[in-house]
Image (cartoon, rainbow, N blue to C red; front, side, top):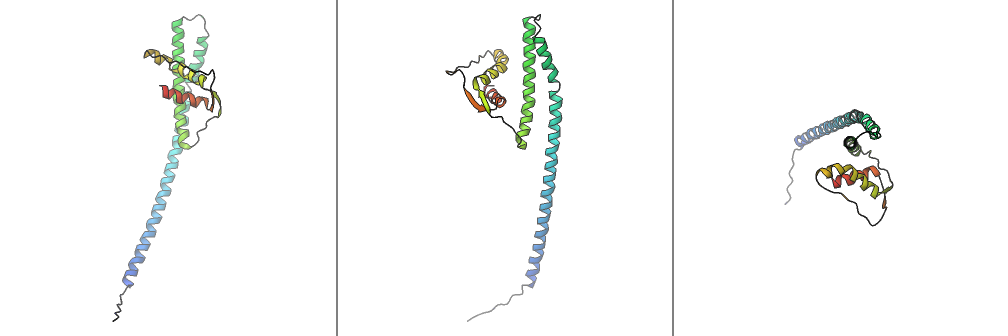
Length: 173
């Protein structure tokens, strides 16, 4: 035997049409919300970039005359050794402050994909010597000694001198 059942789907097709319409509206709302979020994110990035530019100017501006005066004072042969050490300490502190400002700007550059690294021959001994000089006063305060020993007199790598000083300084510190 064969049984044929007839079902009225007109009621169901109206429900399907209504659900399809609601789905289309939801897609439009989601697309609009995503576009608005993207605009807000872009505005936030632009605001941060303006803030960092202002911050760089405000933090770096006072450092230049301090460094200039430390150079002038270091050339004065009439100053005693204690004052010379103080001037050198001021200079190191200002250079560390400048490095912190540079690091902050580097972080912003990394996040925006605009980080630029030089690729040139760099003497690792010179890099480590610079790091040792920058950390010397803190090492002395902690009764530590930093020495560089190498069988080769010069070891060169291709890299960014400033970034290598940053990396080794962070590793050693």
